[in-house]
Image 1 (cartoon, chains in turn brown, cyan):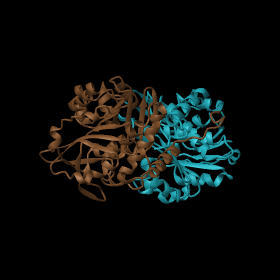
Image 2 (tube, each protein chain N blue to C red; image 1 turned 180 degrees about the vertical axis):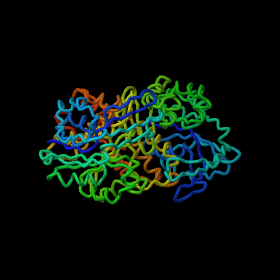
Image 3 (cartoon, rainbow over the protein chains, first blue to last red; image 1 turned 90 degrees about the horizontal axis):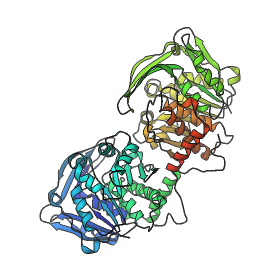
Image 4 (cartoon, each protein chain N blue to C red; image 1 turned 30 degrees about the vertical axis):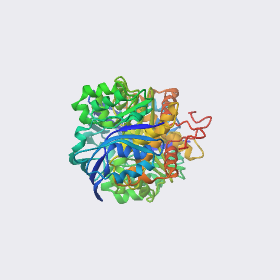
Length: 308
Length: 308
């Protein structure tokens, strides 16, 4: 089934302790669709400026990403520049030029409206809600958000939360949104706001899935070569939603497996700038990492292993 | 098989955001043996002062902890006072009075020397090495250490590392000992110093087992009521070593299962001061948490789950 993503298309400039890149392809919709397209067809909605090189994203079409929802508006493309500190966990923003993204008003092409899976990337909760008014009976809707909306647009955010199935969020954002230091208690509190599926991303410490009343944990893939974390969260979301969208019945097992595929995809993303690593993967490479993750949490059980 | 532990017996004073306790039972040997005794007999070596109330640890004897190696020396018992900050991850030490522990010189009773499993708790690496001179052909030896010894007694520490099978260590200490920000690369570097089994404790983010060339990850148990983390690491070690010592053949599966039992035991420890929670557990309570941890990392697999 198709996955609809509504998000940003950007030019990122990134400084890491060992390298830097200027004006490389970025944005939540780009990272998401590059990852999701390995699993399911993607319908992309985003906006770029007149300076955007559309040729540079032709590769997405070959990967079954529909770009009919990508519009070009007068002005410049969204630009972000950031610098990662030595530990690669913290980063400082050098500039954010919203440009055409400031007036982004997502309008779905008619043939997108029946998309069964929807990912509302990190845009304003009012725009996310607006998208929800346009889609027809989606099967599963997930959203991202950030501390900017939690502190600045909480009522709007809660309205959007009330109409989605899943929230993907960082551990620090859970604590802020739910006003608690305990992320499990926080997840239960957020479930009361609407979404029954909460995915808490903890970076190098892995990711938690709280699905209804169950908890599943997937460790981060041990990457030797952490090059640039930009886009890891959206790449994770792309792997997660793309894998889900292959399945008619969303059982707990499907959600758990989706966590492994999502983690594997994010691990490739951080090994290069932009989508340089993610865009040319083989299915074997992906499955190989999923299996390694599975081995990291697999316990051989026999009849008396619980006898003490 | 019996587990020998050489460590401290102390009176702890603890301040947490919601409560405080004065001069309650503590020390690595206490926490370790209270946990390990659910799985295997324990031989304890530690020192206390003349002020120590031996009656208060009578319960350990009932739990199959041999106290023949506990000596009383003139002077006062080791005392530590600490305060946990709001997040419960960081703590500040208010005082450390080594007292009789300053001249601790562990001498094993003869009937301890054939202990097959040995845990060298966090004492000076020279004393740890000294213990290794006294034991006869142990099957598996694990050690703890801390940043104090890494920065202040590195050569001694490396000598001890060269004669043990396993190191239990915090993630920040791995980075310091191996001089790298990547804990996996750090673990491989430490393996070259001697121990082939490295257990990296990450607090609320769980624990990693690097065993020879495999990696296993166990998440932290989701504790609702985080009361006092003091002793969690030694309790973890007690669960780990106690479970191992039940087995003749230490297969990878046994190590993985031991990680779950260790994590379960640590989760009880943090729910109360001292060993108040750990000392009176039923086997059913322990197994219940192990099963919940297992469910948190269990993936249902079917024939085509890797087909993408």
